[in-house]
Amino acid sequence: MKILRELGFSPTTFSETIVVTEISNGIWNCAPIGVKLENNNLYFYVYEGTRTLNALKRNKYLTINIVYDISVFMKCVFKTCSNEGLYELSSKFPIPHIVSADAYVESELLSLEEVNGKFKAVCNPINVVIKRNIPRTFNRAFPAIIEALIYYTKIKPFKKLKLERELNKLTERLMHCKYIVEHSTSNREYLEYIEKIISEALKELGK
Image 1 (cartoon, rainbow, N blue to C red):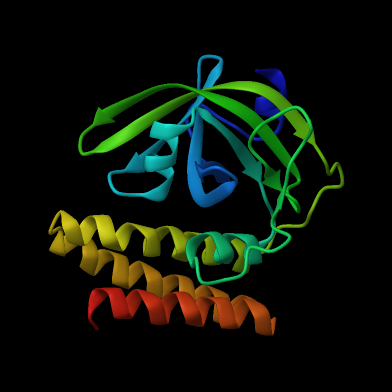
Image 2 (tube, rainbow, N blue to C red):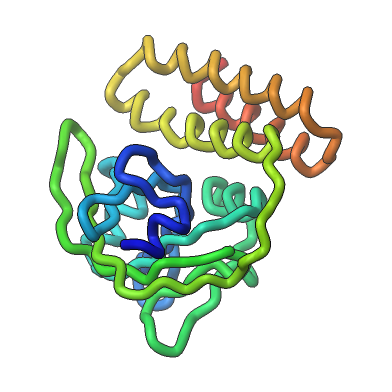
């Protein structure tokens, strides 16, 4: 529990992570997912029809990765990106972790319960590996891009549930993220990422 708190996991605030699961033998799936502490466990929510939920129903093991690399989030959301060199297997755990992760938590699924149209996955943290101890500076572009990706991943389930008001709010929030990125960085890669997210989001929204 202490080391999880030191890594930033909290019972009151979602920590944005990359969760890696196994779809089938040796075929991995990664997804950006917000994770919270609950007693001595970690939990998160997943929607019906997602690869992560389907994978968890087949294999109870997963890794929860702390990543400060936007390219990894992009690869995990837009499955068309190459995943070559993205994963690394340890000799003692069946699910790989993200190569560039600052830390990762090898975990076992304890329960999967439907709650208000989504599923709550409660996991037992088996082992914590810290790969990076050097602190990083804070900037506005990184969290804005992550936030935009989170909004993007909500579009399909919101459309399925016909939540028109919420979809309109997502559009506003996406454009606000774009504004933050464009006014906080000149990094070409970051700017290209936010443009791709907005473009794909507008296609999904039919705008």
